[in-house]
Image 1 (cartoon, rainbow, N blue to C red):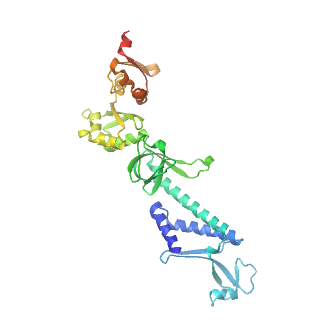
Image 2 (cartoon, rainbow, N blue to C red):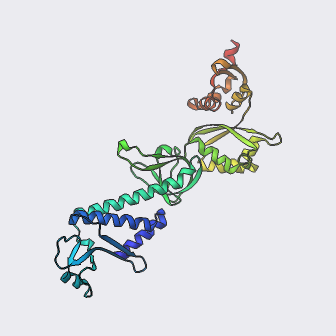
Image 3 (cartoon, one colour):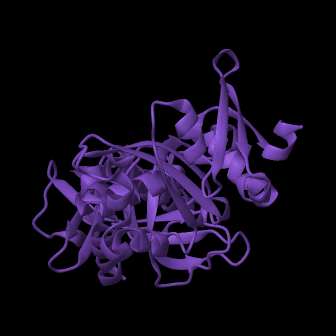
Length: 353
C-alpha cells in the first residue's frame, strides 16, 4: 500500500505539477483530523514521517513516560513504554505508532476529504498559474475523450485537462480521441459559488473570432511583424468568416500576403477551421469602399452613406442581390458586423424606378 501511495504522489507531481512535499503536508493534516475524530481530544503530539526511498509511511504520537498515567493522550506508563523500547525511562518521550487502517470509517472519510480538497486546491492553483497569462492566446491540445452525454471534449493542454463545451466547438466538426486541435483561451474565471462550484475554470473556444485572428498571425508573418494589421473580424463559426486587413507598406498587398504562395497560408488556416469559408477584405478609411468590399463576393455599384445614423444603402445589380444578401442573410449580416454599420441592400432596378 505504501508503495502505491508514493507512486500516486509521483504521478500527481508528473502529470499535474503538484509537489510531493505539498501533498505530504496536506496528508499529515488529514491524518490529524482523522485521529482527532477517531480518538477524541487533541492530536497536537501527532507526527508523521515519509521515506520516499524506502517507500515507508509512519504516523505516531509522542508521549511522556510516567510512573502513573493521568492523561493518556499525552502520557504512557513505563511498563507500556518499555514494550516499545526497553531503554526508555521515566521522563523520556516514547513514540507510539498509530495504525491508520484501524481508524473509524468516519475518521477515514474526513482524512480522504481533506486529501481530495488538497488535490483540488493544488490543481486549481496550478491551473490559474498555467493559463492566467495565456488569455487571448492560441494553444494546441490533444483530445483525450468525449463525454457521451454532454459531448464536452476533454483536451490535454500541457499538464492539465480542460473541457471544450459543445457550444465552443465548430458546428459540424467531429472531434475524436487523439485529434490535435488549436484552441483560443477566452478567459480564466472563478466558478459560480451560487451553483455550488468552487475554484477556477479555463474557458476555451474554437468558435471565437480570436481563434481566426491568431491563426492568421501564426501563418502570415506580415501580420505577426506588424506590416499588415487586422482591423476587424466577423465570424459565424463553421460557416463563414470575414476578416478586414490593411497594409502599412504600399509594396505589400495585404490580401495576397494572407493567401500566400500557391494559397499555402490560407489553406493551412482553412484546414484548421475544417473548411469554413473565409473572405479576406481590404480595409479602407473610405467607408463606402469598405462596405462595398465587405459585401464581396457580390459586386456593389454604389454606396450611399448616412453618417448621422451610421447606416448606408448599398446598390447591387439585380442578378447579384441574392449573392450580396447571402444564404439566410449571412453575407449581409457579417458585412454589417465587420464594418459596424447598418447596411440596406437594394437592387439597381428598384433605384431606377
